Image 1 (cartoon, rainbow, N blue to C red):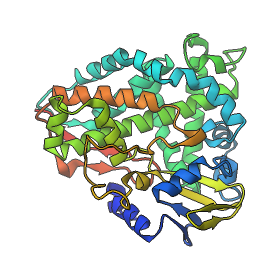
Image 2: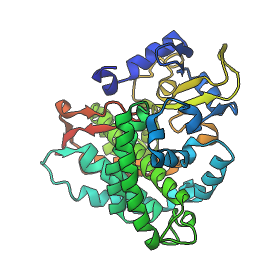
Image 3: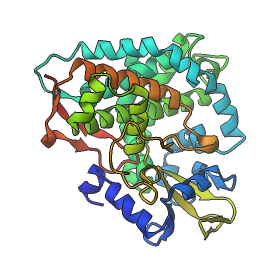
Image 4: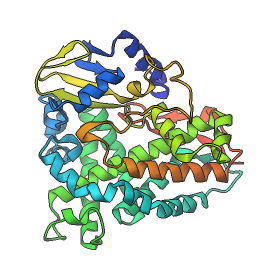
Length: 384
């Protein structure tokens, strides 16, 4: 796919929906699921698996790198019940909606501290100077760990993100394996100093000097999923608002309710546009039979635009009454959804209020290429 796809994949997604809500792609050898009802059906089906080994049976070079494979097998995002259920339950209270709300003032402090580093009229990169450090700071508060641990982890996560998007490439597996080694060192060093209030503390085991693998793997997962998606939501959300000065003004002046703004941005440009699955048994989806063992690419982003049922799907509308699927549905509904929502509300509200007349430099916008997440690499703004 050309660079233009990574800049704006939605025209391609629209052609998928126009073709069919579900179809078999001969080149990729995968079922593409793009229709809203079909996405809902697949994600809720007990006959569909998220297991890493099933998803990558026989064709992933990560088997050459045992520590990388062990890490991925330890991510509950890539597990089926009962392992998924057990680990998710251990983490759930730390990411619940009431806890996210209780941390709202701390999130606002993180954002305010980052805004203080921005000095108009200097050009500011909303990705690297704002959304990424804010997302890391927010996750540090959630996990009750030092902020510099999250910023260091974020550097290494880029290699893992590239590998997950293209797990068939040996060079990406090698780079990801090296990143896992560095992350293991980072989190082993952290374990003895963890507070009992940290979400990671229950996973460490009896000897903090030699923490168990469950601790390491879950720390990696939360660093990856917690930072990448929240940073992506904040950065892309601000970008789309800056491209529409009228909408930006509504947010900056408080005419648009912050929660509604975040929900519409999640629908409009979904931070995790696609998730992989594999069929455990034959299942029927919109009249198509997906056979046991077939791989499935579920396009959350296409389902959220829902062109077949929305005449204005490509329009930002903060009054829209439409539930989105940005966080998935079913047992793998995003654990960190309340945190991402609360963090994005704090970041977008504070940024627009601080810089109500900010202007985007369109020629500086760069999207990451070859990743499974919507990641803005850079976009410079004149704050005043």
